[in-house]
Structures are given as C-alpha cells and as structure tokens.
Amino acid sequence: MKLFAALASLLLALPLAAQTAPAASPFASLAFLEGPWEVHTAASGPSVTGTYAFRPELKGHILARRGSADTCKGPADFDCDHSDMLYVFVDGPGAPLHAIYFDNEGHTIHYDVTTPDATTAVFLSDAAHPGPQFRLTYHLASGIMTGKFEMHMPGSADWHTYLEWSGPKAKS
Image 1: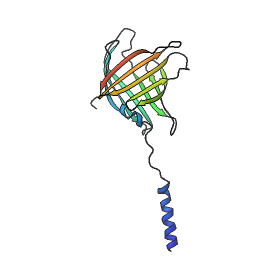
Image 2 (image 1 turned 90 degrees about the vertical axis):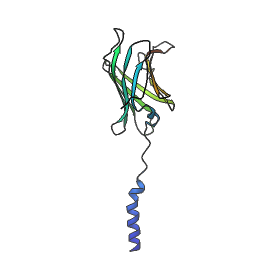
Image 3 (image 1 turned 30 degrees about the horizontal axis):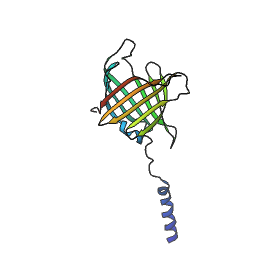
Image 4 (image 1 turned 45 degrees about the vertical axis):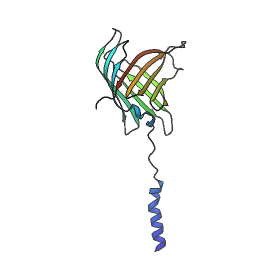
C-alpha cells in the first residue's frame, strides 16, 4: 500500500514538474514605449499634435502602436489625414524583434528592431530592398519620448530626417 501511495504521489507530481516558469516577454526591452504618449512635432516641417500608444495585443504576442492626430497643419503635399499602424513581433522563442508598418497611403515597411540601450528603440528597414531605407527611432529621457523618422536614399551616405516629434506620457 505504501508503494502504491508513493507511485500515485509521483505520478500526480509529474505534470507539476513538467510545467515551466512563464517565459519573459519578448518585448521586455521595449517596455519603456508602452502606454499613451503625446505628440508635438518639431518646429520645422508640419505642425502636428495628437497621441499614440504602444500596447500589448493578442495576449501579449505582439506590441501594437496606433496613433491619431488632433491638429495638423503642413505643406500641401503633407497628408494631415495620415493614419498608420505598427506591429512589433517575434517569429519564435528567442528570435529577434521585427516590426511591420502599414499606413493609409498604401506604404508597408518591414523593420528589424534593436534596443541599443534601456531607453532607445531603433526600427531599421532592410537596405537590400529597392528604394529608400527607413529608420524610426524612439528615445525616452526625463519623461519625454522623442521620435525621429529618417530616410536613406540608395547611393547616398546621409540619412535625411522626414519627421521629428516629442511629448510626455499622455493621461489615459
């Protein structure tokens, strides 16, 4: 009887032993981005104010950024009705971060995502694809999130800034 009780206890304990601790979020290095942020564009270029937010979606399998403009004034060729979505994802456990961007003008950009330090994220498109290369950078300092979207034209050595913005955490 003691042998039966010992075997039963062992068999009941096996499923518990087989369970592993939950894996850390693949987006832990991007935690500083999460939440709602205000947008105020830099003095030069279009004038935009609004908000955007990075939030985990699909049970934490992606990190999504969505935004909206409250006010916008820009040159005639600037789309003030612009809207876009950015999804950060991993292809599997331990895989590097990637992102995909879509906008209402039909653009799609695939990014590799790196975090050179605890408060900076760099989204870099593949230079091997035809056309310009894109770099999107977020940096948090003293409670202010700054962002910069840059383009690198084929054959050029320089990155050209298309849009810069900054803002504090928005009230949710």
